[in-house]
Image (cartoon, rainbow, N blue to C red):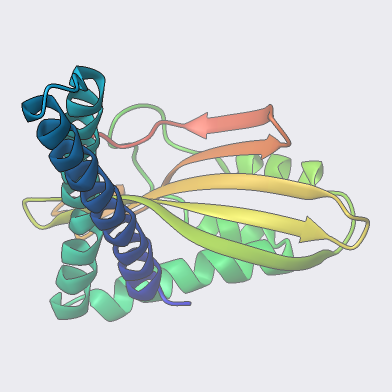
Length: 204
């Protein structure tokens, strides 16, 4: 699945969930208001319906941004290069290639300390067994002044039934080319944080 497709899919699922929540909240609110008018007090239902509608709107706004970002990526003049970076990250993980992963690190950190080559070696040092498959999921995407900051989630399953989750944040499109590449890695096994390298870039 391409990065644009992952962002769009996440956004669509979130918007659909928001619409369902909005519909449920609206029905609950209308029923509660009608029962209140008839003398059957249902203030709890009115409050609950209002909360559901508010949460659904926030849901749709938040996940709608994923769809908008996916559209921007599709139209961006360097979308192929950004897609290539995501593909290269996946290849490095699949092959457990620390040199290739380190090659994708940004030379400078946007918000903290830059990653080192040894960090890539440490990442793969935690993964026991051959990698069977990797599921990719877009977690967040921020765009500001021509710069994209993104975070993807990689769920890695190994041949010996191990499962690891790696969050990788990276930048592309910055005027400072040294910022482009992987900026942050956070690795889990189950609920346990195995290691964290770098810092999530904050464009604000």
